[in-house]
Amino acid sequence: MSRTDPSAELDNLAPIPMECDAPFLTIEGELPRALNGTLYRNGPNPQFDVPGAHWFVGDGMLHAFHLENGRASYRNRWVRTPKWRAEHDAGRAIFAGFGPIRLRDAPPTTCNDSGAANTNIVFHGGRLLALEEGHLPTGIEPGTLETLGYCDYDRRISGPFTAHPKIDPVTGEMIFFGYNARGPFSSALSFGVIDAAGRASRFEHFETPYASMVHDFIVTANHVLFPILPLTGSMERAMRGRPAYAWEPDRGGHVGVMARNGATSDIRWFRADACYVFHVLNAWDDGDRIIADVLQYDEPPLFPHPDGRKTDPAKSRARLCRWTFDLAANTDRFTQTYLDDIAGEFPRIDDRRAGLATQHGWYACANPELADSSAFHGITHVDGSGRRKGQYLLPKGDSISEPVFVERGVDAPEGDGWLLAVVWRARENRSDLAVFNAQDIAAGPVALVKLGHRVPDGFHGNWVPAT
Image (cartoon, rainbow, N blue to C red):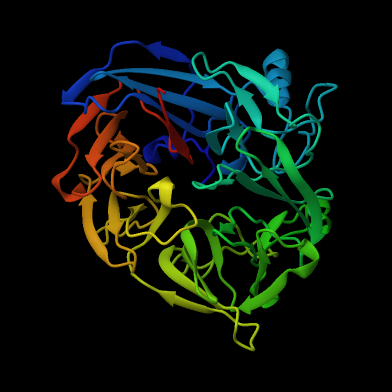
């Protein structure tokens, strides 16, 4: 469904039309006093309606929940990208679809930048960055949410930058990639590293088997893996009015494996049956093996076949799946083993274990008792083998966002802390920020921060501690 579909508000997809500040929010229960910092969230919120526009291309809107000493406040702002500013000045939409494609009746403008900065927001090297995978990071002032402009790290990087960079908890490095690195629908990827101090220390390009939408990638302590899966991009299709991105399972799945300190020219390509993955839970090295837990689809949702046919809804549900790569074996295949049958998305871990073996993971899940498994009605907690440790399901009709883990303290054991997730209350058409004990989500929220309006379904966010 389009984010601007008139019926979308029934699913909490429609945008909200305002920016606002709420300095004192009502709290039900008791906020843990150790929660001092800000939860930043990002998601598409079109400034102007574009009928039929894909959900992924709406203007980014940031939502900041600041928690301090048991109190809570809220602020939201659009990310003022060049696209947002040009359309704001024109008083109407100018761009539509993926890439700088203008509406046929669009007013004249010198802006050719359709970046929306609408997918994630991360803090690294002293910078708060709004991200979407087609453009450079956009700097954001943490308190006011003022847009500071693109960040190119002293012109040492260029082109697309993933919405899912990985921050190494040991070195402090931020590892990133970008697809379409040599232009729209090109098969090249970029790869780079930003050191702990916020300096670009590596940036290069390499070719992949075909042009693919590569939303997420995999990083362990010793390796980087690049999934090239058959949700393909095609300029030819786009020029003919066909789907710019489409499902072509005959292309098969490919995953490139590279040593962290190795060369892109030495990437080893593994193959698998066609599947798609938007998000990775975590991955780690295990001797000569690499283990990666992902949320895998048999067919991707939201995108059609090249001729416009929809993918099969029964196959377009993600389930927790373990990928195993045996680097010592004489094979170019890797194994894919589903660990659970419940549909889910937006997986998170205790980020202090990113790229290392982990014993805790959480993701938003569907309610298996409801016919509609496309919405997420709860949270599932799993252990390091993918077995369920707990589950919480919302009242019928309500939906939940990505759960973000916050440790109890810097020295707390893995998984000891809280989960923060934004919940849409369907009957009241507004949202709460729910705070869970991460080790006992089945008990329900220990506190609810109550908003007077709704936060539309979005993508990703992160916690930034006050210190």
